Length: 218
Image 1 (cartoon, helix red, strand yellow):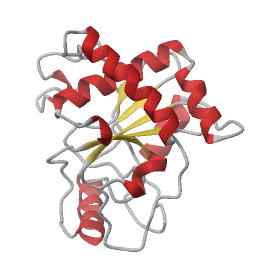
Image 2 (cartoon, rainbow, N blue to C red):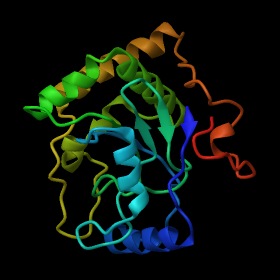
Image 3 (cartoon, rainbow, N blue to C red):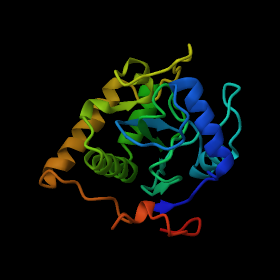
């Protein structure tokens, strides 16, 4: 686990609070209660390109803040944390106030199914995604049905959106997510119902407010 933070200072917090007020009816930038994990793939060539996109804070659909996610899993299995877990990231319409996003580095292939399957077939990356997801699932006591792909977001019972916006992404559809569910469940049961945290997570280190790690550390 490496902490590689994007800029999330007072400006982005103000933008996220205003976005939340427009879309969820509450002026808030903190992620106070996590109820879901959302799986994504970057449709880009590298971790660096994804990090740069999230760091840029460029407007999306005409609104600030820009898109971001809490975690990115690279193809070699490295897990990067880009923000604290208790801040909202704009990664999924209708669910940003209730979910953590997990991006996986993978270029788009011939179909969404083929793209997700490429991740499932890439051992180090798939194992890291499963371990991170199992840990977060248990940390927040999440239902397996609320570990979903971006393509499934509009149909989630947790979906809440005050505008007419809906997700139009096709990454991580139900058949491939079910495969992830089976692996996550298998890891939890193999670990006597308690999945170990990914390497680098210990004693609350991920969210220590006093620690200021250098980019690239952890």
